[in-house]
Amino acid sequence: MRLKSFTAPTMTEAMELVRQELGDDAIIVSTQRAAGSKGVRITAALEPADADLAVAELLGESVDSSAAEAVRAALAEHGVPQKVADRLVNAARTAEISDPTLACAAALEAGFTFAHLPEHSAPRPFMLVGPNGSGKSIAVAKLAARSVLKQRQVGVITCDNIRAGAVEQLAAFTSILEIELVRARGPESLARIVESTNGLFDLILIDSPGLNPFKQSDMDYLQALIEAADVEPILVMAAGGDAIEAAEIGEAFANVGATRLFAARLDTTRRLGSVLACAEAGQMAFCDVSASPHVASGISPISALSLARLIMPQPAAPQTHDQTFWTEATTS
Image (cartoon, rainbow, N blue to C red; front, top):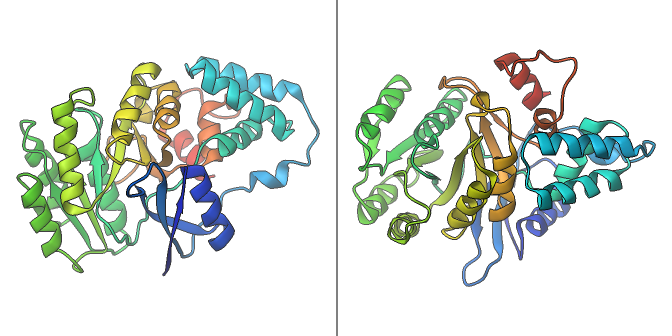
């Protein structure tokens, strides 16, 4: 694996540097806020990966303003904030693509970044962070299962000493995967555990306690955990809910270093406006999504095209968002 780091003022600019240097097959293995600035630092690698449909190849199709209007209608149905929707509709119109889903994909590609979590190895531990009840523990279990099924060595640590039964819940999953769950009791304990696991695992996943993003003492504690072990925080946000509140949550977790968004519980909602608002406000890249309560299924990297398929009406698909449709939307 060839690793290289890139630093730029924004996630979009950093991703562009990655594409210029390593091409579209690059895998984003780590992102973080650049030290001493508001910039972003990305570590990328070259390894085989399935490439999404190149939206840029579609720009030669004929102009059809109805595609942009279809995008506008779909974004309104999903409760996307007006400012974000206007920007995406303008991008869809500029793309000059007649197919509404592909026009939406082009707009999302222009307006957001996509950097899925590596399945094989990463130089820094990933800490799943977010409000209480957002789905962090199940996300840890799903990510661990995905890598274990690919014969990778995975370490799992929990810092959640607050919620009743939190450790037992995650331990039930790790036991099935034959992974020892290690419990950290604060920043210093976490730092010692991570240091002791150096070189033992391909991936290290850390479950954090659910914390109030609007309570400064909670966010200070989370910041201490993140800095103690030099981890990359990944925000887990449950789909659905109020878009304005989600945007404020995104900003709060971006302030402690989160640069990627894991969208959970897509199977229990019909509107994704809050997820888009969260990524926009926190200037975060979309990484992976979850659409099933089952540990061994329903998790996938997300791309502009697969997200567009979830946003736009799909006449040929079943009317319910069952697992088959969701899998086709995110993997086709």
